[in-house]
Image 1 (spheres, rainbow, N blue to C red):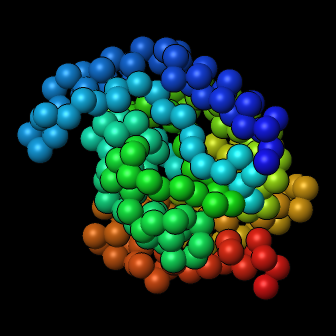
Image 2 (spheres, rainbow, N blue to C red):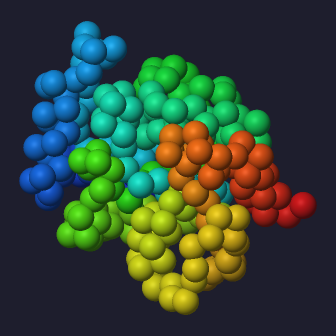
Length: 226
């Protein structure tokens, strides 16, 4: 077990939870946590910045955009309690990266194997649109995670903002965002590019289930060398 990595992630995650670098985002997640929506009116919202989660020895690093206002911002865990989380958990289960095919709450028993989930932005942004300054403020946390998760073989970016942020942090230039593309990058790693599993993409057919599961099957094959 990578105790050094786990300790470093613990220290980083405590810092993330206490972050208040972006006043607009801090105000928004607090407001959402107070106002709630009808179907979650009796629930206690997390309403704080979100840490990543998963295996400290992960070979697959998944980078999303940001917590959903009534998903991760409510449950306290990335990709949990919303449709995107359902799509992600099911695909990870079917390809051996998760022990169960659901991601409903922080205490649902979901455990990741060989995978770690994080995001460019740690607070839910209004209309899912973070500002450039907010992306810049938050990028320090993703950069540190990239350093700590030294066993990573595959980086999967979900959506163009995640793709652009990762490329900037990693000093990658000349790469184009296109679903299904794979790039060989530094240290023998592979960058996989995917649309984000948001309702906007899945309900319209821009991202089909077959397109989605193919991404994770590709990640698995790269990791195993098959």
